[in-house]
Image 1 (cartoon, rainbow, N blue to C red):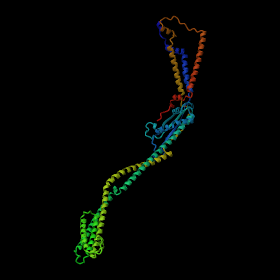
Image 2: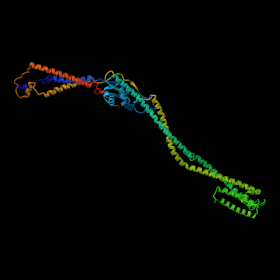
Image 3: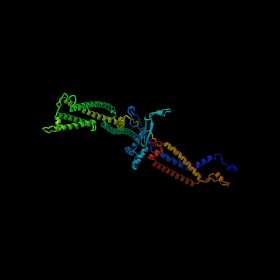
Image 4: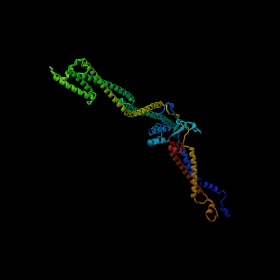
Length: 557
């Protein structure tokens, strides 16, 4: 019998659990009600979050790039990043907030930076590829990535305001994209224009330098080398002919001079048949011819030249003989020897003819000497030009190299400047790559957050967990015995009898009063929980954003 009494009955575990729940039902109900009331109030009082979305299409350039190349080469994502920095700036967003009366309480209490930060968190920029073929398995991945779209969304507690702000932001992206592309295109064109002006100025300076160099060294340039060689050959041929003519004229003059000398000495073939001219007149004429010949020779040769030395000796001899003749003659008037000799003319026709031939020979000799001197000067000039041609060629090549490189740069810049001008005109006419609103934002039909059913389910789970935790904690803290089996298992003394609980009228009244007080306390607590939850949840946009994962802003690429 003892063994049977100490053994646990079948189903004691389940019955004990049910007994514990029955006994602790009030303790389990209180945290359940508090937690469930708090979560339900939170789900009920939180404001609805409405999100409007406008889809912007990125259109490709309307004119093929084979004809006109755009100078705006940045990709769409990079350009969107630049545009976002401009549109989501502090000044621009605060103007939009004031225009649509966004965050009135926050604008009244917080700084403009806080308002702008809050608005930035409510704005999302999402990329979307408009090509459905990309999403299919096996589709090609090398399609043109410029045909893309992106969505601009804004989340707030008013559906009308969310639609208006989303469309405003989408319009700003379109306007700023046009301004950005036009600014980049015009800036590129202006930069190339300024570079072209500088290169044109540099090219003009180098052209002037080349022209001045060619004018300075005209005749020594490389392209004139062949002409100089041909001219030099022609001058050398002319010099050879002039030398031959001069030699013949000198020989003829020498022969005529010797003939006159023989006449002066009374010899020669004409001495026997003609009467001798007066001695003084003949010697004076001869002396005059020799002086003219000496003057002609001195213009070409030095004093050591044999002909000059010989002529000077003849002049000294004639002057001596003439002085002797004049001293022997008594003249009525004393005149200058040279003027008398010049006035004295030979009366012999043969002598007169020889003297005219001498004069002609002297003229030919003098002309030949002058011609040879001129030809020799010209030959020296052309030889100097030919000798300087390699040096001029090297110097000119250095100048021409810089000129050609600058000229090539000028041509390149000129072509790029024309292309940039066409590209700028393309952007100004909005024929390039641009944005257009494909789907404007409309009033959203349902809120995007918070998910109230999810909050209620989470609150139910938390309430059940709180109830279970309270019951388990109370059971572990309470050490009283409630069944005979517990006393028998814990105490080694026999149990003689079990006295049931005796409840009097007083106990019933006290128990009823305690229940009423507990119910009132629970009701007051629940009201306090509801009021606290209302104060926390009402108009709390940040909490709505935290409880709505889809409303958190995506990372901007």
